[in-house]
Length: 488
Image 1 (spheres, rainbow, N blue to C red):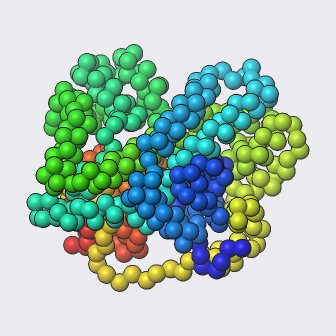
Image 2: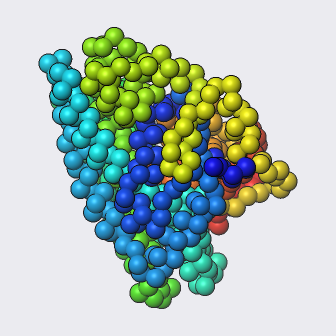
Image 3: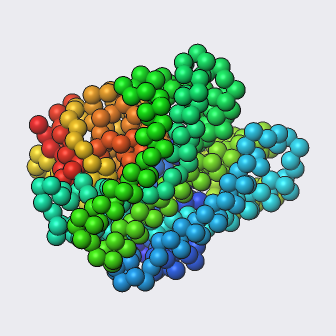
């Protein structure tokens, strides 16, 4: 039984669906790896989805308790993020292999038996991957326990020349490349080779590159990057004040230079072996989250490809698969009778509750009353600044533009600060234009934190109230060296 006002909405996203979120939630709820790495199981969660927009909430006391437990285990050396990453990579490699069995392949000759076998393998390894990923998320998301613990280490050494938040952002930055880094490296190499836009875009290497990486930020249901998206990125690189060669050298040397700076800070501050270990664990968790995002994008694209084929074959709308649960999809493909009409209704509005690890769908006429009873009460904010954690250091000033979904992306210009509850791959075009980012939710492994490091833009995460405090058009300053955002 869920207690009144015990659930806090932690995630709010657009361009998503029930199936995709449930795959992640099932990992959090049912994978045995959660107890191994996090220390206990989740019990009560709430998923509210309407017209491809969703909110996911959890018993906030349990969430915070698990976050504290992870921090305690990390502090005592009883938890190793490297072991968690190794298991991630094991399952991730299998998922990548499964994805490429269907991406750009002719599936018309596949029968239901082959689809069923493929889906079962994907479900098994992807759900387990999400269970393993629970560690990186719960370690810091929303409550910021881990990043606060790390900031506390640096606070002992803090001086005007040694700003805590700036050094925190550097020391927790992943020290190994993910696929986004590899993709940009290859694109810069192509640009350097062909030099002009006209020669670049007609080259076989550019066309092959665009095809290979089109899914890299697919999200839950697309769209894919188009050739034009890659061309726009090329234009931006060519317009940079630095030459393509300079940008390529800088990108190639990024991790080498980052590692040198991390070692310098550790030495200059005189961090103990245990303190160095704590930051190493944070970096590993950061990379783990980025790795899981790469896997998520490729398998969601692969699943969407399979669902489109199955929808044609069985004469059902593709939304049936986007709003069905795993067992319902397997039953459907197996030929068992499924209430497709009821499942399709879920797209309009659905409330899925897991109480004591048992799944229940709430009738449509009781959704509002149920949410009013179980969600925590809103907090009134009266101040002109907020504090959070620095995800990438630096300062930026501009007009606040609040982004709650895809329709808001067009508001963001090159002079603005993007303010959101959280960010997702769908927000990337606006993030590319904005001078800096501010989010309510998040932690050191959040999407905004990962993108801020990739784009090297000032970012303050986990402010809790930015979208309530600031309004569109407010002139604000992001001081990510100090983790403060204020009206100016």
